[in-house]
Image (tube, rainbow, N blue to C red):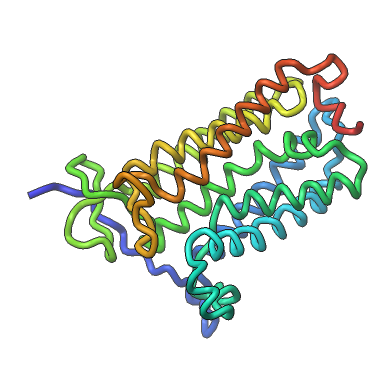
Length: 272
């Protein structure tokens, strides 16, 4: 008999009188508020090229990109046949379904619009916001844990958990792995790395490489979405497939930043 840590069986809905509020939505709010506060802290650094008052507009664009891109990405990557058969599915956010990779694409589009409106360099904007993203990822994965979703394969490790929808076997709590690695650890790495002036694109490159490596690793023990299963060889998942372009782009950004001309080094270049 395998031992397992007890799953806390938290109610995914926070009941405030007659108004039901989903904890997953609360975690999104927590992530945005934390990102806004950390962005203001980051803007106050000497020579940042940013002012605290600019952070609200920046986070508005970011939030719009996350919500629109995350939902459309989920529909496109994970439930496209259902959406084609019933387009109303796209709007059924009450049934869940957000994609990090879709959200990332949405944020990149939003950052492009913000950069154009404010006259900033696109990569300078992404370099500024990249260290703020992992806190939102941490909050979102805690929301997944409360919902008891996105669990992993059966395990005999002592921290395996029996999830309400995962059958009787202890499973990898992959949402907690992601909260730790792509959330807290990646945040710490990026926050410390960006504390000193870096060549343009470097911070964005570290984020993309760091996230994609963590995601590729965790996908090896995470159970794929039931409607997709494994895409090839009995182990390739959609999460892996979508993370590979991130890894390649991040590697290119790090290579490009290493060849940066002197005027591209440091955050004041954000105003160029």
